[in-house]
Image 1: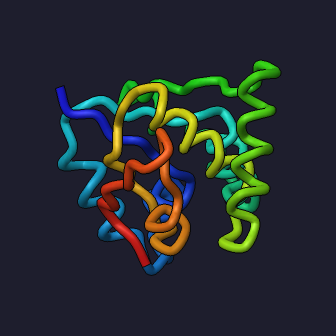
Image 2: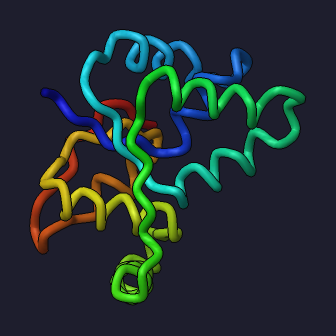
Length: 139
C-alpha cells in the first residue's frame, strides 16, 4: 500500500477554495488511494489556519475521517528532544515543530513521499541522517 506523509498546507488549501493551491491539493488528495499519515502537531497547525472559517475545523476533522488518515502523536519526551534538536539544526531554513514531527515520522515509518507546499523546507530537511523527501506538491 502506498503511504504519504501529509503536511498542513495541502489540508488548508484543500478546504479553502480561494487558496491558490486548492486545485493541486484537491487533485492529489482525491486521486490518492493509499494511507495518509500525519502528526498531531500538523493538525494543530491546520486547525489554527482554519479557525477563521465557520466550518473550517469541522471540515478538517471530516476530511481526516473520510480519508482514514493516521494521526501520530509525537509528544513523548524523547520525541520532543529529537524535534528540538532538528529545529536547532534547521533554524536557518526555518523548521517549526510540525515540520520536525513530520521528519521524525518519516524516519519512524521509512516514508519519503510527502504532500506539502513547503518545497524549501522539505527539499532541505533530511531524515535518517541523509534520506531526501519526495515532494508531491510544492511552491
